[in-house]
Length: 79
Image (cartoon, rainbow, N blue to C red; front, side):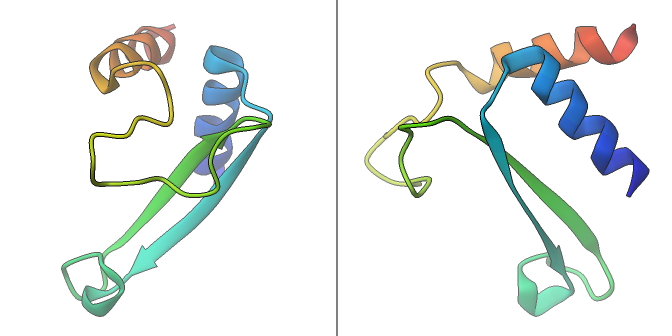
């Protein structure tokens, strides 16, 4: 829970979203792939963005590459 709060704050400071969708997957049938495995999803949201995150048709919700976001967050985590 503390790590989740830290990651939300990191994203808030780094990319200034208006809000977040936060959810978790637990267990094999929930999409985690392994029994007992748990992972969180933190999705930054902005006023006026889409209500879903498409995974087809090469549609982008955030006009920033994942690599650029990774680099930005990695640098902030090192501080």
